[in-house]
Length: 151
Image 1: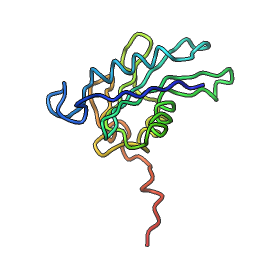
Image 2: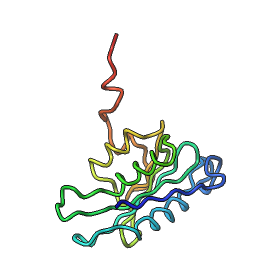
Image 3: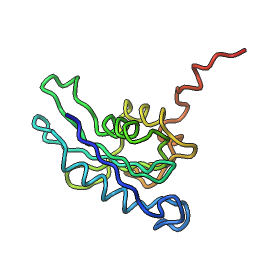
Image 4: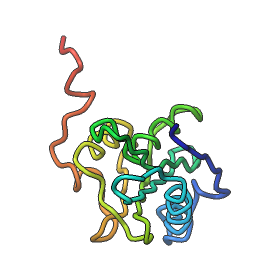
């Protein structure tokens, strides 16, 4: 079972702890660490938690859920996107991911693609090199717009 949580952050859609962009990175870090504590990682012992701010001000989160058949393992981002849809949908505005020590993790390529699909314009991610846009971490991405039929 994938554990997911939802938190509403008062004022999250307005100016926040970052000085104007409206993203409270500290709140996202706290939510990611809380999610990580629910991870199911008996094989790798590598617990991961992720949290994201939605365009409407909610924080959604998820944790990794391993499986004895490693290919069936769910990354924290997968649980997060499931949580996004279970709690009303929408688009992701900011993203934060941590390991068991609370250190920032970069999403793998598969998860960058997953996040790209559900991003808001100018989505930002906390990375191991600071805050970057989705376009910086997945340049020239393939997405839904590439599947639109042309007249």
